[in-house]
Image (cartoon, rainbow, N blue to C red; front, side):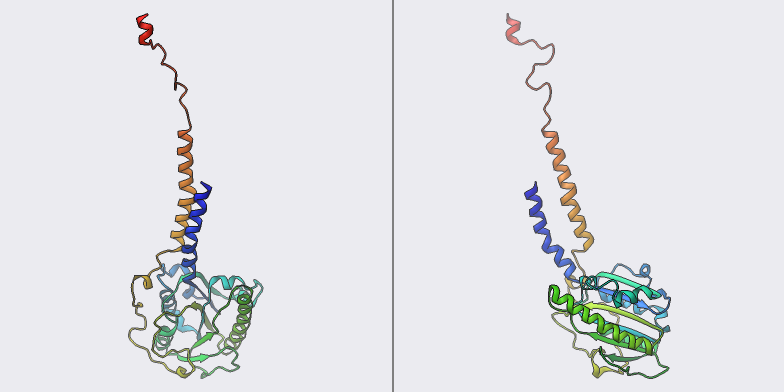
Length: 285
């Protein structure tokens, strides 16, 4: 039984790791109370672009002076968990009026904000600007609404090197948000991780400096991503994996234990003739 359990664990480990490695976190907060970040209004996502599209299509998004879209390649929920609870990001979430934290969202196949930044800017009558961590000034016009695109350095490495890098990224992000929040007191921040696909989009990205000020979008900006079923759905979801683990480690061992216990019970009458039985030999005597 123990050996079988070990084999099952070893068989499921790759699937478990694969399921979570294909996810990225989405963290959002607002400087004011907002229904935009109400988790109950979000349907079960098939990929992160669906969540982001839902958030940025809410009516009160346009009430902000700035919509700050922060993208970071390679970011996972485990990276955020390595940050100190007393760190800047954790404290920012604690004091924010509205927050949304989704740690395991199946990733989309492209940059999370490339098709959405221009679309929400057009809907809100805002100007798209790019901002690099470390900038001391924000390119924008006073009195205008802005969609600010921030591309953080990619997260890479393993173990302590990765943890140390994340601490540096948090510090750079905190400095950037201080500058942006001072320029735009009423703001919404959406921070999302992502991983590049094998066939990246060739359309211009609002996150590149050359696209600052561009405010056009195609009619398919909010269209669902193309591709096969594996690019649209995550078959091994955390819920399914949990069900499999419960089935293998709780239900099956319980049933086997019950069957083993029943089969080990011996009848008290086994090997003894029934009461009142008269054998043929005794009858002949």
